[in-house]
Image (cartoon, rainbow, N blue to C red):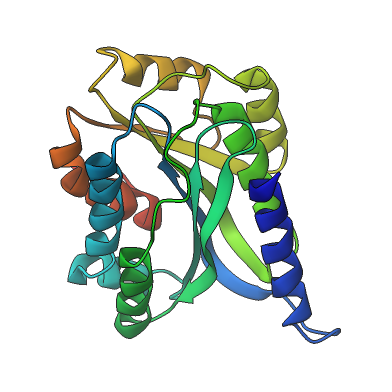
Length: 229
């Protein structure tokens, strides 16, 4: 209940901060970054996800990729997720339109503290929550992307295909970064059962220590909207 309330409260705060006649800000990309906080992720592994994500936004090539887009801006939000009722917004929607803005986002991500230590893995609930986060967020992106990081399979919540179908109807692309610590063929599972939408892809890393390089590659690909070798 707390997690759902957090999402609703964050949405209300965004709306309250906007003038009644405000128009949505045009950006190249609206990006939901979802960090796995389920039982299979220990404290050190969670910290590696946070550090890897923060470090990526400090990199010059990420800054150049954003400034190379037609509108020279993206909007990002970070959500921590696990069970059906465990989705917590860790970074509200924020514009990145300069290297300085990217570094500020990196600093805010670095300060993230884990919200819960126990939880199942509900990919469908995450997709449902992420899809709602695009509603009335103050932005009009040319692309909408949900970026899921996870080391596990769905074991809680409604069937993924229902959530995925709804997201695709809302022109949302679902990508994934799979961490192959518990399931050898997890990337295949995400390709077949989770990702979808225009240009959807799965990035793969074998372990959490390799996560920072993987999330950097993934962000470059999502921002640039082209394959990165």
